[in-house]
Length: 321
Image (cartoon, rainbow, N blue to C red; front, side, top):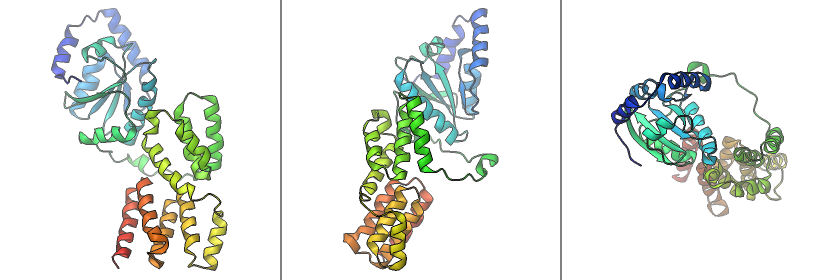
């Protein structure tokens, strides 16, 4: 992809024929298409210099060239909007509909959609064609020094909500899949919810049918790793039975391991890690080093860096004894 100097783009834009009628239409389009998100907006040629070039002097601007008819755009767009929200203003997302903003598409030499460009410090610094999974998008941003910002004070301490019931989530997401069968994101969400209820077989079938772009999504990759744990729960007793067995005999390490796996798959990561650590504390060679292997596998699927770091240190301390 050719990375050209933004000043050249501005020169081309300045000499383009923006007659009064087109100018008025652009202003109208700008007013009608603005998104309600503070970090995402629809970019037009009429406002590009102000909203993208000048704004990039203070905040990096990711420019998403897309089209209504573009299938991959429907996957990439929501991912970029999610990241814009997650990064809390560390960058802003400018969306350019190439059919409505043909001058911009031509100036940036867009040959296919989706195409993403990064404008920073008034210059176009990088870009890529096609839809990337979330993990690679985060790496792209990190490569250019863009890290998530702290949430605003009003977002940092939201009212504590009751945890979602995974069984109710499954019901809700089944309805969402029925209502929008072509929206593959619903199927991924359903697979994740099914995993939390212990329905590993159906979750695996949904994951197997995901399109390539979603199959490489971080959540799908971690869900597959969780399936490895879920496979251990085939014919395993329910959590209540395992807890009763441990209460009666704290040294029942098989029950502890199965309970830890069940808690991990259900989303209670810390409880699961605690069981694995307790096995390691009681007998670190149990089951051919099962506790250490389970901890390492769990670290690979968890997103909570603080939690992983804390239990990794505990594991290291026990192994060094």
